[in-house]
Length: 300
Image (cartoon, rainbow, N blue to C red; front, side, top):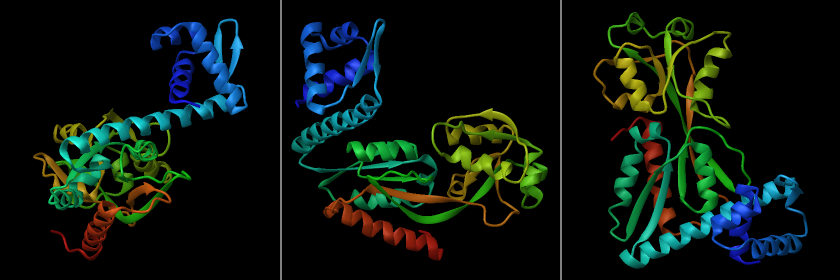
């Protein structure tokens, strides 16, 4: 099996049409058809169902497509990093993160890693599900997220549980005392869109649903900064992790919740079964220290 077989297969799987796939690959259709047939013979299963109007992936084909994409992504990342390392003579260390964890001590970790002049630190803003995929594809070396993702190729470590607080328009009656979930449910809420798999939006909205409370969603936004801007504009409140309190925003008051033990995890994700190299060992040492600072209340 050659890499071209994987590239050809992915193109055909995305187009589900041999003619269009051949045009996309800038090759003639007959050699593409032969390559797909050779691939199916080598794998030992049919990857496509041939129909009069095109192709349909089999169950095996759907699985093979996911794996082929990861292999090609890994190769592309490896080639890119190799060129960068050769050019700069540096080791590349890539970190994935969700924005809400970057208001705590993660910047300190990045700063301390960057003291090593032989390291090039690359940051990728990714949702937790995207971090898992990026780890498997070799795009990142470690990820920091908020939700549990079950995957046999990725280890997830709970660093600590972080309280959830409410970001409320300054001067709003809700700022007179720590609001309850019931009180919050009576006000307009700014939320983040849900997507496939668990995410922060599911976690926060689930806090209300599990208590039998309905919420009045005023607006859905894609990023934290926009949400806080709408809060400052008196459009409603939003729920955020406690670290966000460090982001001082005019017109926004941060309030603890009356309800106890409402928190969201901070999770580190790494590739499973991989022996840590010197850079990862350094990152883990720094991370252990920063987590200890967090748990004991010693903030920088």
